[in-house]
Amino acid sequence: MAEIKKILATGVKKGTSLVIDGVACTVIDVQTSKPGKHGHAKCRIEATGMIDGRKKIIVVPGHDKLDSPIIEKKAAQVLSIHDEVANVMDSESFETFDLKIPNDLKGRVIEGVTITYWIILDEKIMREVRG
Image (cartoon, rainbow, N blue to C red; front, side, top):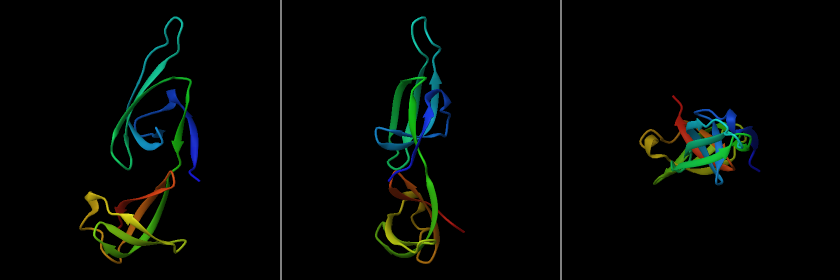
């Protein structure tokens, strides 16, 4: 089950993680308008998907509560590599599973190396290769 916490729209800052349309995103820009005579402050939030890199823009009232994913950061050892997929073993639970190798890590992910992966909304993604 994906872990999520609620945050106020006016509390969103650059670099915050949000769930937009069911996709975990990182905020790249926030603009807050002042409340009008009969309205509420509005927040225009621009973000990019953590997994797919797509840009998303939403406009919400400042008093709205938004979903923020809780990201688990874990370590694993690479057991084998097949094309663009690495079979890894978690360093704590010893569970084995496959992870897609991101383009920026290709060539650096080799058998026996330790990697860091994140669990975001029940999805596992490889983030970096450890020394």
